[in-house]
Amino acid sequence: MVVVVFRSKLRSEHEREYHAVAERMLELARQAPGFVSFKSFVAEDGERVSLIEFESRDAAQKWGDHAEHRDAQKLGRERFFSEYTIQVCPPVRTAEFRRD
Image 1 (cartoon, rainbow, N blue to C red):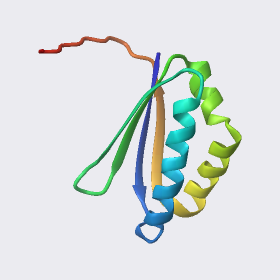
Image 2: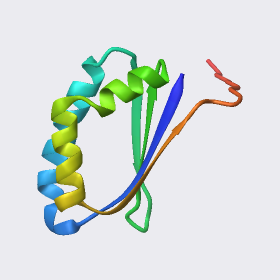
Image 3: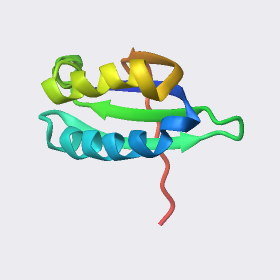
Image 4: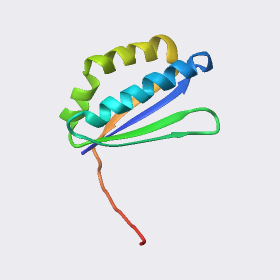
């Protein structure tokens, strides 16, 4: 398992267009072999954090290289984001708790 941590700040003038592209990317990612989960959060200062889990580093890399995703990445750099960082992390330790 790997976790991709995607931290970004949107340029407000392209926010509507971003959301349409992001919705399409999530639709495609959910169909990608090895995709496990996606969660996204927005902080008070506008920073967005997305956590994406894949079964393997190879699955995450294949998603990163998907042709339509590559086009969206280019749009992100050219239009959508004022800044971003991506970290691909293998879990070092996992602990879970659930109260039913």
